[in-house]
Length: 628
Image 1 (tube, rainbow, N blue to C red):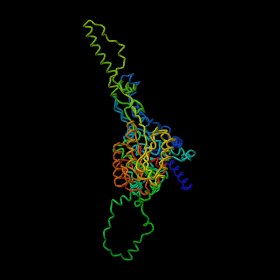
Image 2 (cartoon, rainbow, N blue to C red):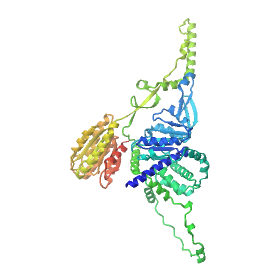
Image 3 (cartoon, rainbow, N blue to C red):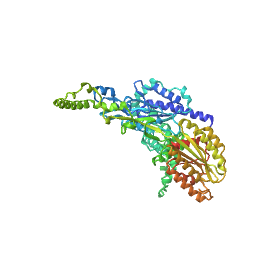
Image 4 (cartoon, rainbow, N blue to C red):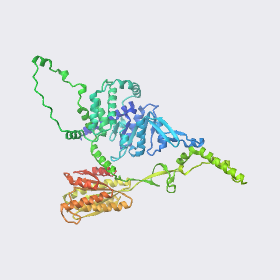
């Protein structure tokens, strides 16, 4: 991309980021919020700071921790007051406090699915409902979410939460944001807010543009109605900003760029081709020839220039669709394709890389639960006291009556040692049903096994690509504490060149000494990977297997040449590898990918990625996405 084009695209992105800031300030509750994606924390912090300067002082602003408890999020028991009064006293939660304001979530890509589900339920219902531990409360809660995403390309916030946010803004590379200003004064924005309900009611949205926005959403693969609703709202707000009485095609196109393009799952052209294939073209019915009208009538029926111009109800959908397609980020669809394949694999029962182990006594705290075996779990004292607090008066009264009956019986028998001790009445009465324990989850160690085709003329190119990818992954392993292994197959057998290691120096030495040439014993390579994976799984590790090959085996397990037998042996080894439940990725490295690699990936029950010209950066991103 030329420097001028890159600068123009960066300036356009900066203008869109500031425009999103203004639109969200105008109508935050209807738009839901924004998804800020940036690896540079300074940029997202600058955007939020400018956004907060424009917000009204009376609007609440709350920051939500990732590991927030249900009591703090939704509301629960006030422990201190409940113990003093001997009854359950309600304490408001964070979502009730942020009503009519903004909820800031930092590192939203790490938000647990359970918390995201509770958050989405409150957003849909516009209220917080609490009914547990003797508490019954219902409070209004409407707010806008400011979700900051600083993760890698393979890390994303929950899809259900993302669907409820109108905007997704990519701030990477926008250093000009640090020196920019919102572009509107707080006083002018306050006046615009006051007049907004009247102006929204006076703006007309043509039916053709409404159909165009909905058709654009469908053409981009968006089947949720929220995307179309947000796009319609944004188009109307853009018309309000320009004091227009009617939404124009430019407003609809800009709304499609801001709302629909960042969440596209397919290209519009592909969608049109699919519809063309599924719906065969029908020939128009034959019409009988009509007698031309007289010349006088033809003169009267001559259309003038005004009649030739299309009316607003006849605006083509292509204008809005083309505007949205031009704003789709680069390489978005490739990442989405891998993400969809990953979701299908998880839906079939596969486990992600570094899958989480529940019920351990070590790791990250993930919540509070009932105690099933208190001897093997860690007691959470505050939650236990909260569970027991509402029942103290009832239990003390019950115990007092029991002791009085016992004292009366002892007195009748002449035994005064069973008198009731008044000082014991103030003690807490805790039963086994009150016990609450801390739950933990621990991430298993992950080992990525590269199985590289080192045969024939492709050996030098494939090994260079594998070397670059392994070095990139090893750099990440220092942070994630993962390991990398390398298996190469050529000639008549496979060899484990690099056992699982985190040493970058050892990996470079092993890769530099790897020779190439000979036949393609694909089955032997897969079998060696299965044996290594079995050993690692017995140690409690999660295994990710990445196979770089064109899928054209010509050496069988017995070491004899023969394509048919070699193909059957490779498919058998792939099925055995699938039975282990590992995360697998087959990278088809042939110049023109055929069905061999795709069929082998299906036998492995793994992901298939055709990459004729593999680059180390793209391969590393694909491996991280497949292992997520």
